[in-house]
Length: 463
Ligand code: SAH
Image 1: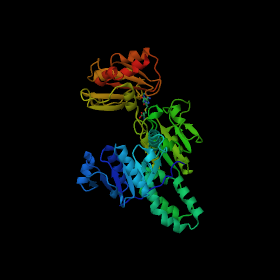
Image 2 (image 1 turned 90 degrees about the horizontal axis):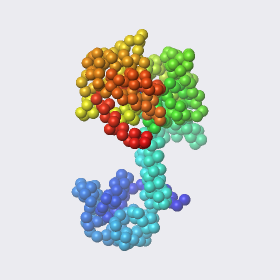
Image 3 (image 1 turned 120 degrees about the vertical axis):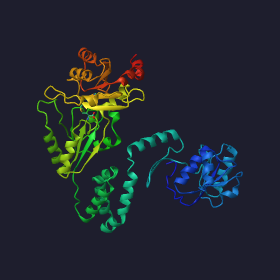
Image 4 (image 1 turned 180 degrees about the vertical axis):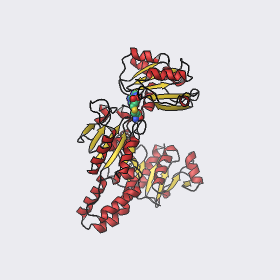
């Protein structure tokens, strides 16, 4: 190990920063975050530091550096571009056994600043021993992405129970087992979802009861339109905790592969099998497996609450008293629009957007056409392939010009994405001529014209 990572308590301790520029300002900010009493010695201060000095948040010694300033300092940072001065500061601090950091000059440092992931009170420090600060930053970004923002809240909650747990379990091993059980149960996710009170209640009950009442839970997760990169952090985390998976037709194999490896997967989508699983049956399966204590992952294409029947599924869960959480996903409209270069609203062309279903019931469309056909409004039609011809005719019959631009995006956001651009008049026949694979989304409105300009990079990429 090149350095020993330690966590210094700097609250109300005097820290000296030599230099008043931007680099110094960054170190000052960090030291202040740790509660230090910061003094800056520099003839002049950068703007931000000036304001802090004026507000009395830091002390400014408007003078050249002098060794006497080191008196009583517990930590020193030299951040000037004067190499000689930096060297003098370093030497003097070391002679007094005060930890010193000289920015960008590892040879003059007795300690280095790590890259920090701050989830106070949880703090993660990353260092490459000065070999490559950029690498440390990349690693930090990686950690930022996988460690939920709620970690600090979780640590605080657990901290609040420490004494009580100690009193309850005298034996250290028993205590550890208790905490492990708590952390592997639903408490963690409850806190991440902002349900601290429930989580605290669960810990309390577990303390009273030798065998805690851990139940299963259902995660209703939106998997986005296809590209696995469009999953949310929370979706991925819950996918990796699942004991069993029920997924829909629209969930791509790439995304399914990201669920926990040991979790059995069941297809409950419509249409692919001869026997499709009916909604009531899905509702029953979710309840049954959660009752058996499992973490049940219900994975749906796009967003669960947009044409996803997510509402019906959680209704039955809440009726049965099963805990659940819903994780939003990127809906097909957002995904397809972004990947096809068609903004759904635009200052000049569309001030509103409506999402409608083009699903036919008994060969008919049950839509409020007058609401849908509005000036400066983009219309997005889900499930509109079978009824496309009828939809286009109805839109014209209700007032849209036949030349109104319209696009069809098939298998949007996946490597197989296809975009057909035409008008209400031409799109149905364009679709007949092209070889199109479901799922498809239809976008109608002036914004479709922007596809040509905004998707230019795709075409140049294609050659
Ligand atoms: N809950 C989903 C929608 C389910 S309804 C969501 O929020 O996206 C199914 C319809 O969604 C399909 O018929 C199609 O119109 C649309 N759809 C879903 N994924 C799509 C994709 N990758 N490309 C184009 N359309 C898609």
